[in-house]
Image 1 (cartoon, rainbow over the protein chains, first blue to last red):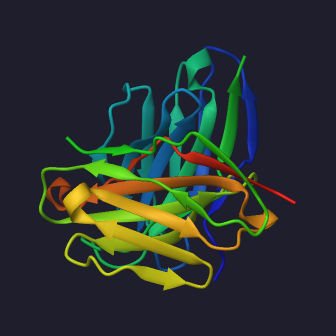
Image 2 (cartoon, rainbow over the protein chains, first blue to last red; image 1 turned 135 degrees about the vertical axis):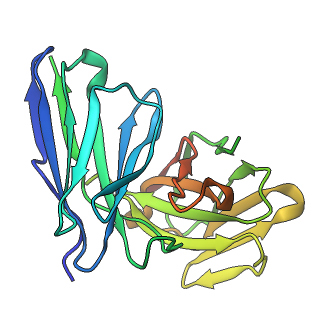
Length: 115
Length: 117
């Protein structure tokens, strides 16, 4: 099976712009999560989607949003970019049902640089 | 609140040495899950192991072994006969049952392991 695929791999944006990141989960996985990784804050949970519904959201401002499509693919959007949004954004998927305790499988991430 | 502490920021060893990465966690749940992930320079987090709070058996997988001790809230990871390819950042993570179906992961700050030839 192909792994979790994230596009693009690298992005450079200017402060104030908005950005959309894409994630294709492993085939058959219906749960998709997003994490932000920065040198200062480490890995932090952004949100999780299952069957097109957001189940949980981390402690991030409303500028961070996401959605999931019927084919389980997911996108996250960051509006009004700030310098502090520069980070590696990781998407992960897991198999099983809604309450699955399966481990998360991560993609290679999208490295976003805000200038 | 859940918390994961990886006190070792960086470790350097010479190839073939054994190395242990420490992980200490805090949780009020009686049911929880512990994980180890490896992050090579490519950026992808690679799943290594999952343990639930009711299973304190140590596990060995090839050169990797894990020591889970609830009494000390620790879940340590040992690499035997380290190799250069083991160089990466290793993360310990915790997921609580009470967080419901979302079960987000709380990660430690990671340990950068460098294995020198």
